[in-house]
Length: 202
Image 1 (cartoon, rainbow, N blue to C red):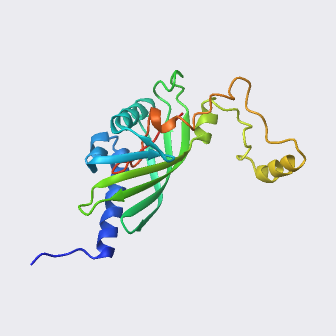
Image 2 (image 1 turned 45 degrees about the vertical axis):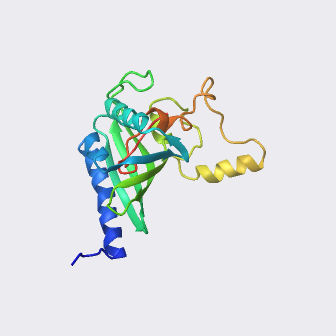
Image 3 (image 1 turned 45 degrees about the horizontal axis):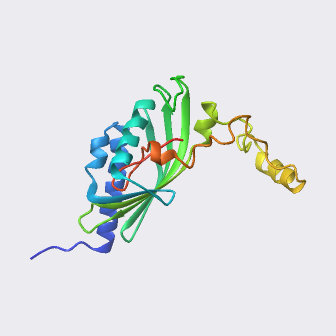
């Protein structure tokens, strides 16, 4: 007699696998993340498809720049064949990062990971969305005044400025065309890549 998994059991299994991916990241074990991938896994960063080899290179590159990175999973939701993780990442800038020499600075960023599983519990699709702004500001890629969200009441003040037509504070001179959000996962990505944990930056 073959035992069949209930929907609840499958969802709990998938959630545990997703958490195992995050745990592998926290051991700095990229291969431990890749072990959960289906051979035909598909990766998407903010809905743009990323080649698997490119994703792996990005993951290893991310660890080279931030070798002590730590994923703190704030919540995990499993429904159907998908799991969504809300994650805060902390790390130290200890390696070259897009031409920027190590600064030793402590940084943080935030991410959402959506993983889709097959019946065997292998990750077949991975979607991620990142907020790198805190890290980019700390490393000087973006001016500290951008968005101004780090100080109390900043969002309200920003809204009033827009209403008056002044708009949000401008980016520092020379940075307008170097915002990294568009190219991040294509360059490196540590988190829970569809069957992994992916992250990227700029």
